Amino acid sequence: MSRASAPWRAAWFAPLVALVVLGVALSLARPDTFASPQNLATMARQTVVVGIAAVGMTLVIVHGGIDLSVGSTVALTTVVIASALRAGAGPFTAALAGIATATTAGLANGLMVARLRLPPFIVTLGTMSVLRGLAKGLAHEQKIDADPRGLDALLTPGSGVFAIVPAGVFVALLVAALAGIALGYTRGGRHVYAVGSSEATARLAGIEVERVRVLVYMLAGALLGLAGLMEFSTLTVGDPTDSVGLELEVIAAVVIGGASLSGGQGSISGSLVGAFLMTTIKTGCTHLGLSNWVQEIVTGVIIVVAVATDRVRRPRS
Image (cartoon, rainbow, N blue to C red):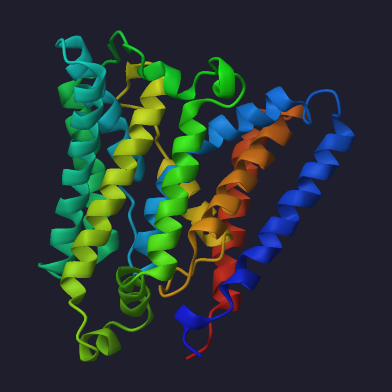
């Protein structure tokens, strides 16, 4: 049985159980704060950026790649949006400019990996530095203040159906649902799994591997642009130093959710479970009064455990 056809549901069943158990334990420990609807809604908002970025990372990892430029791309997107708004652009135009910039960055990653046949780790390690430098240069190494012109409402509770859960959470769920359907039930999704399982076999089957790689990185870039838009909605400033280390959190969420770093295995739903599990752990640490340095240690341990778990469940060749 190939990794693409393996029982992926079992891969993220364990983190789902862990999420439920942890949620119940924290609710019992802090019933007046953790289990409140307001806190759960806050956790949902805090998961949006990582969740959307994890959707793109799932595509990248399933097809056998990696992207270390996540944090830099998100930061550059916030800077582009803030710069456009300060220059007088409307909110839609500014958001589109930010997403287009991130999509272009993803396309560049894909072309270098596919056409130049460079290792994804090296390519995205380089673009991580390049994009961060571009963000700092565009912002003149300082935050850019700009009137959000309504973009802040994406992750701010409003009225009616958005009174507790803002629109951005529903946008993230819609994006995840569409990506899940595309990855699991379309020809393109099967090609992504095939390339990640065995590039040689995929070529013999007539799949245009280079095209798949370019499209995957470009889609991942577009999703990072959307994540950057949500980050700007939270910050309401363009910050070139924002989201440092975000890529580690996103990769950990995807691997926790059942994806294999060797490619060919993973699911969007599993990645969302992993993302929300990490948010739950961070929020739980805060409610238990643990210091930030303890949270950072816990996050690091989670990353190591996630990679170790991937190695254990990976079929031996």
